[in-house]
Image 1 (spheres, rainbow, N blue to C red):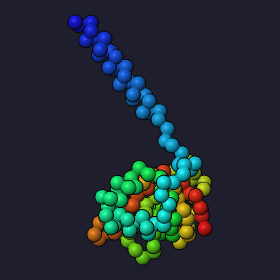
Image 2: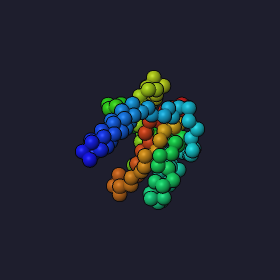
Image 3: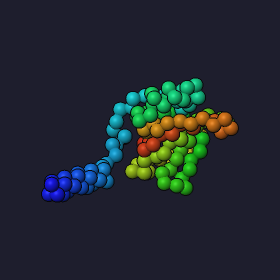
Image 4: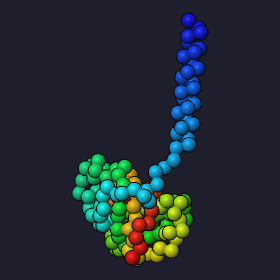
Length: 145
């Protein structure tokens, strides 16, 4: 009986070690080559989350979206660089965490420029005093106007 328990414990430990190794070495999908599931202006995406955030979360979370809009701010102090898209003077924005693999492509972007980025939507949050922020991760620049 002890032998069976030791064999089972060994098999379980090997399975756990294999899973950890596989997850540790997993690569992110390169969004540069993926076709977006949704294409829209930043204001449209923000409006969807302001109207019904639960429905918008179900529709957009973990989906590749292509968003166009004017650059409101650029936060280059951290890693990743975060570019906020939206209408100047409004509190709401789409926060695009840029993919550092393609840093050379977006390092010359300036506030006020109109750009298009593609990334994975991770959700949105509305705060009464601060507006709505929709977050997109691993963004890549697709167009600079």
